[in-house]
Amino acid sequence: MSRPPLVVIHPLVLLSVVDHYHRVTDKTQIKRVVGALLGEKKPDGIIDITNCYAIPFEEDPKDDNIWYLDHIYNETLYEMYAKININEKLVGWYTTGNRFKKNDIQINSIFYKYTPNPIFVVIDVHQFDPLALPTEAYQAQDEISKSGEVIQNFVHLPSTVQAFEPEEIGVEQLLREINNTDHHSLTALSYQKLDAVKGMSRKIQQIQNYLKMVEEKKITKANQHIMNNLQEILNYLPNLVSDQVTHAFTSKNNDNMFSIYVASLVRSTIAHHNLINNIIYNKEQEKQLQQDKKKEVAPKDKKDEKQAEKKEAPQKQ
Image 1 (tube, rainbow, N blue to C red):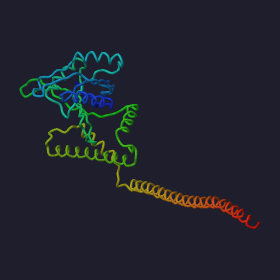
Image 2: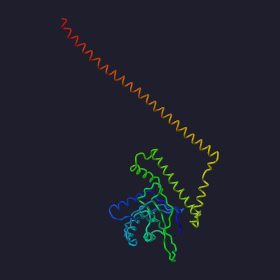
Image 3: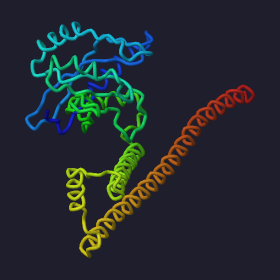
Image 4: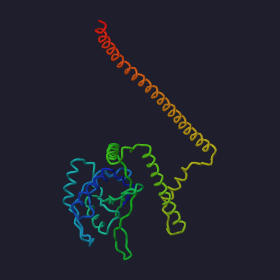
């Protein structure tokens, strides 16, 4: 049984699973949901999961061996999906929660009817850590127990979340409705960069812990694939001690600071220019008001003079 090198989960799958979970748990006492995963296997072995649908599922919370999965409903709905998009094949199934249960091996055995190597994905709908993915992918593997029996256990698979361009646009529009309007502001982008650095720091800490366990011989046999990747990462690191690299960083930093300095000067000059224009405009408005008042007062004075002349004329006669 060949393991896929990577399981790619698309945002549409995550949105559908969250919607399925809330539709079921809000009206019933069911604590988790189950559904089928649709996608395709690429020539390089990567499993691309692009769609999913819900399957009726119930289980006894007290006994893991008592559960029900409507496989007839699954077959009927899969036939309908196949008529819409023939390229999407049933590649596995999903469940909600933060880890798999004992009866998941039994549920996984049902999906061997539809695909030779079903992918099992656990999706945590209550994942609030911005530095971690809410998905974990597994695949069943035959193992020999201590008693000599052949049993199946889940083996972890690397997984990630990727999106097509239309999905990225849709997710962006959705985030605009959910988050604040300053989603693309400098503050929001700075927080995203900070979260990315924290995530990288966490990954480096995991690598450090793994290497310590190998050094202390807590892990008897180191994974050669991991060691090769670490060596490749170290080879890609730049030589920061070199004079050329130091000069390049200094020049780039000076150029950036110079741009910021010029931008600050321009901003101050424009603000001062606008202030002067406002002062001139206000003075012109004051002059215009004074002239308008004088024009209103002048006709009144002329009327008063005419009335006074009319009163004096009879007296002279």
